[in-house]
Image (cartoon, rainbow over all chains, first blue to last red; front, side, top):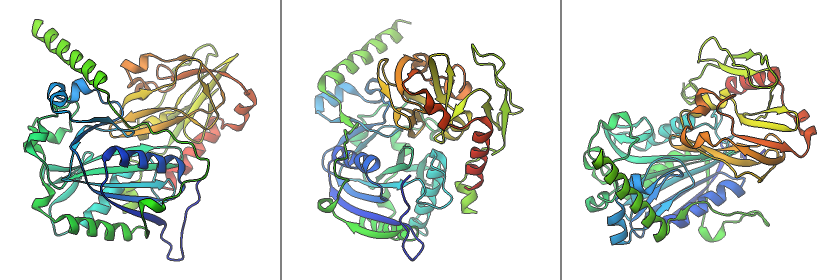
Length: 268
Length: 166
């Protein structure tokens, strides 16, 4: 059982790691390593990622979620990550915020999906107070009825990770690489992608969002700043990341499956 | 107020049900789907997995309490036959909407059978956590590990205490 780290203030400690432009696969590997080998609480903020990349959840099937032919033509990387949830395309306009915590870090919080999701929404309510009509809608963060933040989680015996990709800005052309998912929240109401999402930049600047998020985290935890160079993992800890890049061969196979499915449906 | 928001919406009352047959799982009855079911004749881990030891084989799955708290299961990742599992270590994962959750083995041993129905029908874990939703069958390497697990009454109290403290 991991030991809670509580200082005299009564608040649990959390390490704050601020990154900028780190490739999303590298971020995911770091997060999973911290989840599985660290005993400390972490908040990681990655301000943008370099190249447009598609990121699917653990069970994502490329042929169902991605316009494979366009992705292969334009050489867009496709990753399958270690957490659940849906598919996003991320780039420099995306801001990532991740919490990796011991299950007893937050007093009274059960480490199950919905309680963690609810707790996170309280934290972000404070961030957007006076900024916009923020709420948690099903499992998404919305402003009004438009999604601007997608969430995913991974829960182990003693720890959990909750990470969010925030659409501070996005390229309309990039959204064309994603198919309309079979499984969509009710509040989407069959809206096209561009009618369903919104840009956070229309409400708040990047720096203001990040600063307000750090302030809000500070009301739940005692923050200690870390840098990527000073992160230490337990000596001898073994770890193999499960998030990975799909190979061209896998995408080609997915393309074949997609074409076969389309042909079959046309014949019916 | 915030704590009530965080707590699961599931009722924390649990009901015990009897298993009338040793060769297959008897249907568990519950008064309402809002109550989590716990079966006699099973052993339980604090991470909410169950094990049913039957001769030389032990069957493993997750409890009704666990599936209720996780929500609709949409994907299950299970090990291959022949793989070794270790008590209290992860052997697979379930995905429920936005989250993957590790499944930990209550006992050590070798996987001899995997429930392949869960690939096409992961929802069996929700609808039938103790019967059709079984996950793996294991040949135990250390049967004495079963003694370290909770019985039905102990597990019932464990779940009540866990829900009450959140």
